[in-house]
Amino acid sequence: MKQSLQLKLGQQLTMTPQLQQAIRLLQLSTMDLQQEIQQALDSNPMLEVEEDGDSDYDDTFGQRDGKTGERESTSTDSGADKPGGDDADQSIDDTEWTAGLPEDLPVDTQWDDLLPSASASSLSGDDLSDTGFDSRNAASDSLRDQLMWQLNLTRLSDVDRVIALAIIDATDDNGRVMQELEDIRQSLSGEMDLEIDLDEVVAVLHRLQQFEPAGVCTRDLQECLLVQLQQLPPSTPWLDQARIILSRHINQLGNGDYSQILRRTRLKESELKQVLGLIQSLDPNPGQSVGQDNTEYVVPDVFVSKKDGRWVVELNPDIAPKLRINSDYASLIKRADSSADNTFLRDNLQEARWFLKSLHSRNETLMKVATRIVEHQRNFLEYGAEAMKPLVLHEIAELVEMHESTISRVTTQKYMHTPRGVFELKYFFSSHVATTSGGECSSTAIRALIRKLVAAENPRKPLSDNKITQLLQEQGVQVARRTIAKYRESLMIPPSNERKRLV
Image (cartoon, rainbow, N blue to C red):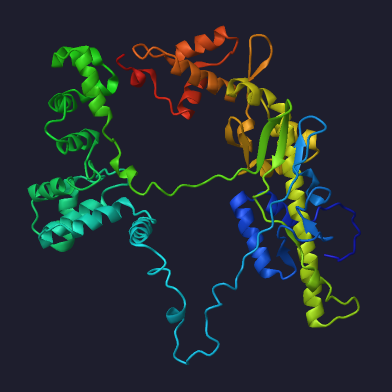
């Protein structure tokens, strides 16, 4: 094969490191952005946090009005006011605690001998008890940790302890034993060569069912609820009737067949209400009450409020610190110097400027997208979810003259604080359903209508999916029954037979 040279012309998009950084910052959530900024501050000496009251610099990010942060406030109409005012300067006097230190210290002097102990003298007895309890309970344990802690405080034989460990290992996070007791017995007999009877496994299971939270280590819902009833005081009203219903009529209870329960138990309707109230006070998944205090907080990226009859969009000033270039280090750079130190400073200065520009671009893009969303969904802000309009990424992309992928990055894990609550920006995007008048209705609005209809239904005769479909058609919304079922399930609304209640 003969070799030859050919010249070809073509276009190719190359992502520069600056563009890659801008895209990466754009898709970060608020929490991740704060970590990224902290890493940049730790690694780049040219970056520093601008404290309140400092003088303005040329290279800054998020300065006061009139500088880069001028677009921090905008509105859906022209002429929106800009937020003004800076926090008062704060100063910390760091000389008070050193005033009492002697100038000459012995060689073997310990700092604990000179400084006040925060764990002893600075805290009172009440403070010690409170902080000790909080610190011990700060980290939430799992359900298995709770069961193991109680097991270590229980007197059991060696064989029973092995059985208890096997049952705990077979218990899921809801508190259910997910393995048959016979399988547990066979596995222990085979692996440890122990002669274990099934009755012994059952006895250990009943022992574990006395642990907290009430209802753990049970095999099904019926046993879980009955175990919780056993731990209630004998004087609890309607306790015996609740045991009878859960033991004999749990299938009718699950199907909402209250007429059968009334006939078989010979209870009056008012009495059955009391019994059902006791049963509903029980926890069907007791294991979920353990380790549920790890709350994840959402920090809104933008605030939306109504001022002088106009909806105003503002960036959250607390999502990121105000950054700037360190002028002292920047002044050390010499133009014609190619030494290692000067190259290091020059490279870090360029990276710092790229980083500040990327942050500024992120805020600019976020403001543009949020403003357009507010303009389109103004009816939602005024009247609620039922007035939500259909919206897709392509519409916003055309308005802000950006690609749909960019809009997708901006709206992911970014949150908007409105008078109606805090919502992810993606919440405002939804598909559309045709109406009888030839218009369009948002799927979010349909979900809101379904929730409203279910909330107003008669508990004795809850609305079926077919009935909801008919009611929506009467309002001009053409939706299939299977679509109603899908929306209802997404709202965590059970079917009509499970929503049936006694009035």
